[in-house]
Image 1: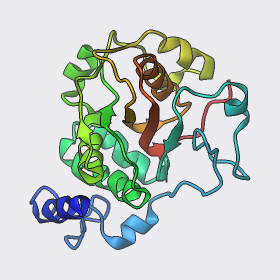
Image 2: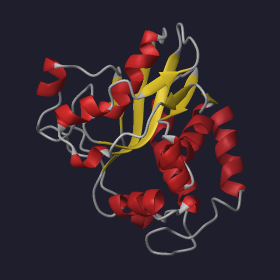
Image 3: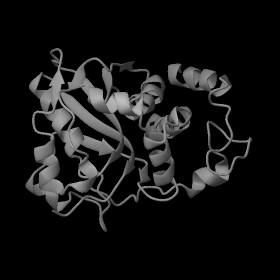
Amino acid sequence: MLSNLKRFISNKCTIFNQPCLLCGDWRADRGFCQDCRRQLPALPSAQCARCAEPLSVSGLCGQCQRRPPAFDALYAPYLFDYPLAALIHAFKYGKQLQMGAALGGLLADFALPLSPKYHLVIPVPLAKERLAERGFNQSHELAKAFAATMASRLSAEVCWRKYNTPPQASLGRIERRKNLRHAFGVNCRCDGLSIAIVDDVATSGATLSALAEILKKQGAKRVDGWVLARAFSPKT
């Protein structure tokens, strides 16, 4: 009931009454017309039950069998592919902050039927240097819509990034894990809490796993990852 009320209110706000981000149609619902929403690249139903890696048959992928991530599950509605990939790139690197509400709405719409219950929703933190360069944390913008829809508490203060790590995109799987070793800090105990970590894109899942690991060391009972798009993992 609370989530439905918040959705009704958000639909009446001018920030959500914007034209479709893809075709410009003013009949859009929270940034996307129905035709363009249907064209977004949905993540296949056959996927890894732990990390959401697209598979030919559902189950656990080989990587999660050999070395499972620290998070309990990863949820993603879409593949990191055209045209969504271009929108995320424009939002993230083109300083298009106004796109955050529409993109966050996509993640919230996906999560709502699943009705997860979390004590905290935490955006993946940016280093101070990256935040100053970009002007905003794209994960925080997505997490706002997710937390409101799930009626969960949003907190960007629980975790911080200790230093500015090199971008993950150019690294292989092993290098991604090494790159994030000791990269995050947690400000408080999280005993018994269920926590959702929100990010824009997951590739190897190394960032989410590194953050989940330190949250569990502080007592978190369950930590899930929620991302707007899932990219295919690097093989090395």
